[in-house]
Image (spheres, rainbow, N blue to C red):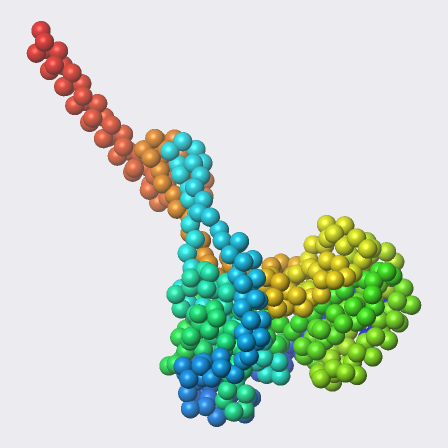
Length: 451
């Protein structure tokens, strides 16, 4: 990890130091993604089989996972495995169930009632990464909120291994969430299939799930035709640690993200070179025993350690980077939280590792990367729903508000908008006048009869 003192960097050097490693390769990535999407749109299932054979080494007879495969997957896991999945499921469900919105009804002025009601999105496409590290946790993070939201159609895509099999943990997690429509398709081709549909895979209204730089780019390219959750790409973490932090904890948190992939990035912001050196020593010690050490090393080569002058400067660095995960290993982390404005998910204190959020604390681990935390939030229940507004006007309400709307419509030069109000007001006035004449006639007749 490169060591940099923040105050010694120029403005341009600071921007360069915070740049993600995959951003420099975007033109090549974008071109490759366009080619794959075009192939899937043109050739459908035939392209999916060809691309799966090319990228995953699997020759598939059927793209869809069958019931026997579900049964075999669940049987292959131990009781302890299933118990761990169920615990994570319960916690994720508890946190997301608490996000359930309530319908809203407001009388904005007498006779004018405005409402907001929520409905599930009809068809959602869920992407679960596979490859070198299959992620059953992502199946839970997507499956649980979609289950609570009640999306009528839920389609999950994930890449197979070279034998055409899906990781049993992913299948068991999906089954726990009630997902039965799963396809053995990964990468850009999965995003294209979910966005545009093929003979086997239905076109979806919105796509969800993280992925590598190619998957993230694919999601961006299909947004002209389908909604997506958020830009969620290669994993990243930024740790702010003061002198009293445990350097072995800091090193462990950095490595937990570095092992995701060579395009992951980890950042450390601390206040002395001495502490940075202690963390580096633990990194080297722990790397020696990691199964994915080679991957982690490649991520660490493009990661940074920043020496900040004080807590305010450390927070400024974090906000400028806008990390997917932010860990505050400082004496009073909640005091810093008030000034944190851009992070996907924040972890407070020494004994709150980021791994809790990745798996089982209850928060969602599908989070904005590449600095998108400046504008996007992490995944939640609301992302699987859509809201509709409803309004109702009484006669009295229209009489009161109608002239205001007419005035504003004419100010914009939209006469038909104004007429839509005017014809109603005129009709109401005519009906009222007729009613008054009839009422007066009845009263005169009753008076004459009395006399």
